[in-house]
Amino acid sequence: MKQITFASRHHQLTNTQTWTPDGQWLVFDVRPSGASFTGETIERVNIHSGETEVIYRATDGAHVGVVTVHPQDERYVFIHGPEHPDATWQYDFHHRRGVVTYQGDTHNLDAMDITPPFTAGALRGGSHVHVYSPNGENVSFTYNDHVLRERDPALDLRNVGVAVPFGPVTPSGHHPREYAGSHWSVLVSQTTPQPQPGSDEINRAYEEGWVGNSQLAFIGDTLSLSGEKVPELFIVTLPTEEAGWKRAGDAPLCGTENTLPAPPAGVVQRRLTFTHDRTYPGLVNVPRHWVRADPQGNRIAFLMRDDAGVVQLWLIAADGSGLRQLTHCSGIQSAFNWHPSGKWLGLVVENRIALCDAQRGEIHFLTADHENPPSGDAVVFSPKGDVVAWMEETHGYRQLWAAKTAV
Image (cartoon, rainbow, N blue to C red; front, side, top):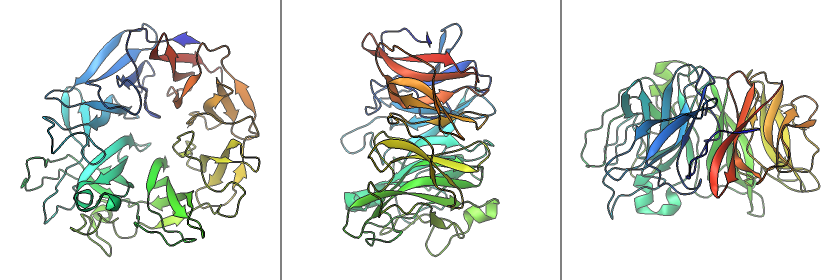
């Protein structure tokens, strides 16, 4: 167990894709906590020397955070808040964008157009937690809509989207806050403000994870027959050709003044779990976690309570078959990630960093005697799987730590 950072400030890891492809650097931002958004730099630290480098520095009152790395090259994508924020436009769920920096070039990932007629391929609000697909071609994100929020905040439903390299997209620029982006961006989930109780309809889609390169799984909030929120697991199959991403279905890709942007034709949302009748129905939101598929794209892992109310790891196939409880431990305390081999998952159990056997569910502890419990936000493997990193409060600051996995 080795402390990587030592500065008198906070270091925040994103929940996945935080390593450079060579396994030498961890990328992070400097928010005081996961909930605030006041960091001005995106940085990286060498896990051997402790040397830090600034990858990007925001200007003009903007803030940045939640950085991830392309799986094959040192291309970084992160959230960027608005420059020159003022009383009418400041950082918020619907006022943020994805930005990519690569070899000294920095550009917007997604475009935004908030004045009708809206532009296909552009968003109308803010994107968040940008994650490359395993082959590095596409980027997933969650989304909130400025246009509908202006009408009624209750209409601005969290959704899941994808940015694909079929841009650039350049809106007409009728509003000073609009901007162009390098990628074509669309939503791939479908939500409704008032789901029918007992149905597959959802009013929120979030915490997505890639399943191979052509599917995305995510959590969707359904309503039980009694009207209680029950988070269930959903999946969408994505287009594989440019024409498919640009072909509208029954509703415009860019939305209307009264409706959210809609998925491309052929993108069908399927529900994988049906837990309304369980003693403890639904996937859990505490600890916050993102659904994750194994490197082979065969098994999707998520957190749900067992019949005793204890949070455990569960697995299901992408076609909805084979649901099973993987762990039978004292309780999972964190988000998790798959080891690159697909044989293990990394997580926090009993306030320690642990590996879970992906077949038998056995827990193997990697650490002991933490001064403070590891953060539940991120447990992230290096590309070769020989090192795992996490965050931990150290002398009042959130610092980065790492340990050998020996697997």
